Length: 224
Length: 50
Image (cartoon, chains in turn blue, red):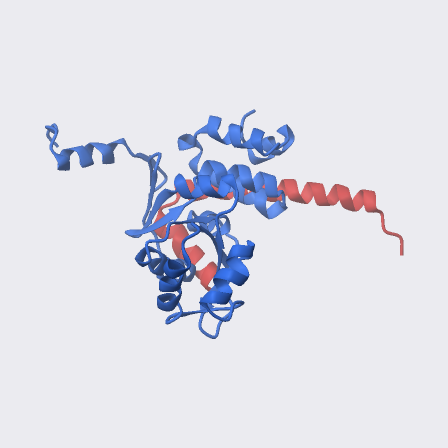
């Protein structure tokens, strides 16, 4: 291919070439591109996220689904997402559209969901109608780390579908903070899969803020 | 019945270590295997639960 001369297409191409090939996952700082067979939970997640996008509500998918989407072999019953706190009318717009396809398992209506659950820092859950699992665990961002996830969310492009996910560096550190065996395994998996492209200093800074022990960091496989 | 909690704790620790080792080995396999291959296997694994 000939040299690019600065037009928009060439800039995009140059950017594409800057992406690093890790297995068959293309990863730059802000974007993971992955083409693979569909899992049912991918389709469920993408169907649900469409309603948030249509309501112009920012979100970040976190935790197990992210590891699973990258190939981790474990089951999950829910997809965890942080959502920006929006005015009730905007939430109601989302609710009215989403509940045509999904049902909220624990809240009776939009008012109950917003005022009774979300504003009290309690998650609401959505599943396909008549099914409890899988479900989306939906909560408003509350802590500084939640807001960091939203503001610094990266793009996971799965089979040409955009899924906003929390930065992997934060997810690894937070998994270590949560501390169950499953969490350590998720953290070790995501680190091993993407280690060449992760910002180690960023992981370490989160680890310090979360007061993660050196032995825990070592267990994940991160050099101290 | 006599339960040796010390011994169980030791086994629990060894089991966790072995599982983490497996996860790392598995990640290495994923990295060197075409997406189409590993994801086909995983689709069966995941979708079998739903």
